[in-house]
Amino acid sequence: MFKIAVLVSGGGTNLQAIIDAIDAGVIRDTEIALVVSNNAGAYAIERAKAKGIPAEVISPKNFGTRDDFNDALLKRVQEAGVDLVVLAGFLCAIPEKMVDAYPYRIINIHPSLIPSFCGKGFYGLHVHEKALERGVKVSGATVHFVDKGTDTGPIILQKAVSVENGDTPKILQRRIMEQAEWKILPEAIDLIAHGKVKVEDSRVTVLG
Image 1 (cartoon, rainbow, N blue to C red):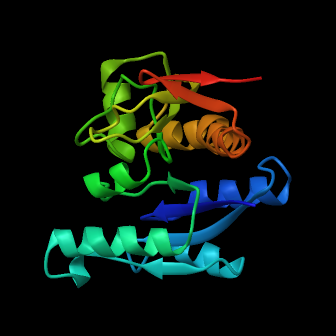
Image 2 (spheres, helix red, strand yellow; image 1 turned 180 degrees about the vertical axis):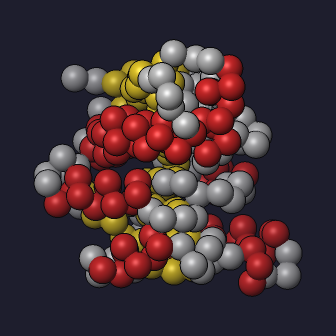
């Protein structure tokens, strides 16, 4: 069985999409071995507990230094024996030592078509605010491997979503979640679990 850890900070809608996809057989031969949140109030923790999934809070606030937090996070993920780490709205920077420990085994979902509206400071509703300010006609979501930069790792999957007249950041955010994020994140996990994603010279090939 392919094991994943899902790291979350908020409501956990992408976590729920993964749970639902496993239940529906969209993600095959895979189990969520661990959910970690840096936020004790994250509803994602309740979603995990409702399914009997081990869930813990590991917050920088509970450690003397950022290095101590980084070490604790890495140690817990390693203890869970996971094959893949999934960032599903995790708003803490992933420590370089974790990237080193899990090369091309950490993925992130970002709510835009990278390289647009990404990088430092582009997360959550802010991404959609900037997209609407720019007047783009198409946005979307990207699943990519995590490297030591911010949203700079090799792209696995992208899905475009139309921007419509009258969109607000919240309306666009919801449409991108429903039409893109909740589809391509489970798809990417299933592809990786079955050896269908290859990385060579920082470029991704999706097989079959």
